[in-house]
Length: 333
Image (cartoon, rainbow, N blue to C red; front, side):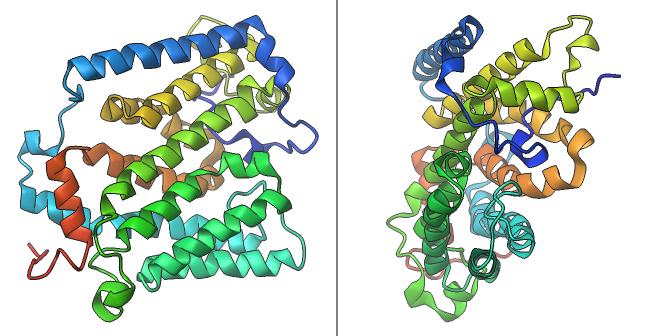
């Protein structure tokens, strides 16, 4: 029986890929070349349409549905807390389990304790909003150490954590934090806040692009092995059966397209809503492990669904998260 889902699950979380590293020889296959070409073509066409529409998304933002500037400002004040809570759970779990940022990055002593404790410290700092920028720097340091401990490919898969670290370094943890209430001299000044959301978007996009290659387009051996073990090729259910090999190429092309569109910021709400289908459908097969691991991605997608890279939203976000520009403002109902 076929399971109705799409393989935007992290294959390496559920299949030991240590003997199946990504290889460039897959990239010369005709199907892979076509998939990459289609992804690039779709991105180019989307970019032309994006400019022709004056950088307006096809799906309207909260203002269209009656959200006031004050209401959006209150939401933006909560945005860093939302991201921190979603990040805390997998960071704690991976730290306790002796994993580095993801379930497949297994650590050994003494790094099990050093990295595990460091991840938990980052999680605590982000949740409470204490020494947030120092915690962001520690998260970057953990990622850099991972280059040597787990390899460049594994860390490239998890480059989204660099985007998250950049978000917190630029925006801090907002008004509902220990930094804002007790340690204001450690909070960002506000002049860098405009980089927070773009950094989050770019980090997420680069992770998706990387995974499209390391788990699919440049590693079809891994994709085939994963699909043989996990019945997630749903094309038979749709009465258009496709081999696992071709299905992996198509899935990689879709993931690459989503990543490229997010990277350049073309029609982000449309892309995010479309991406949510496979992200959530995969939970039906991979359940708790997938849910916990994807929590930061869900938060990032949710925040980017609301945020608009317009001057008004930039100002609202900066004023909402920065103590220096928030003087005298209130964020209650």
